[in-house]
Image 1 (cartoon, one colour):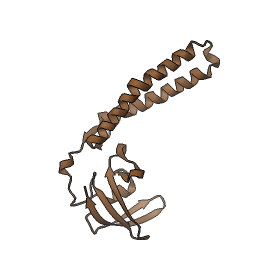
Image 2 (cartoon, helix red, strand yellow):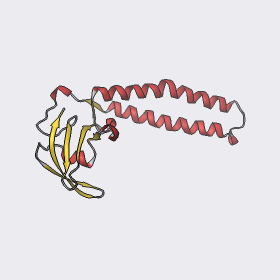
Image 3 (tube, one colour):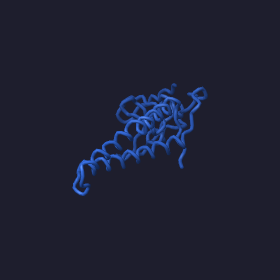
Image 4 (spheres, one colour):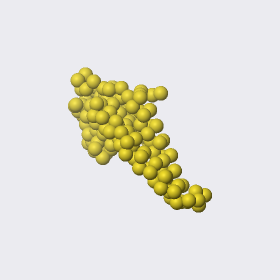
Length: 156
């Protein structure tokens, strides 16, 4: 099982989601299944089939979250340095081909959210930036080819 590094905040959100699924959504689906079952013949009962399918998807999601929680390791945010790019750093990078400047925070896979500028540590760009210092260049292989970035700033 792979270790999942995350912040205390990310872990808290994961636990809240797991709690919601187990304590609210699971009983709601069980109730839907019982109501559909009470309507009679299950062989032609679309409500029953839909509720059973939703239950299967929910149980799969719960199992995935439990696996993530079980493999979670908290990152001690007080030990984060800005000497080189590492998880939980904000990195200001410049695309050397287009001149575009971007700022990303490198986070665990479970906390990634591109709209918030949170880039998963498992992405090609993040992998290419890890360990780089300000002024270093990083060549990153992406599906569309090779991209080159310069690390302009590293912060927390």
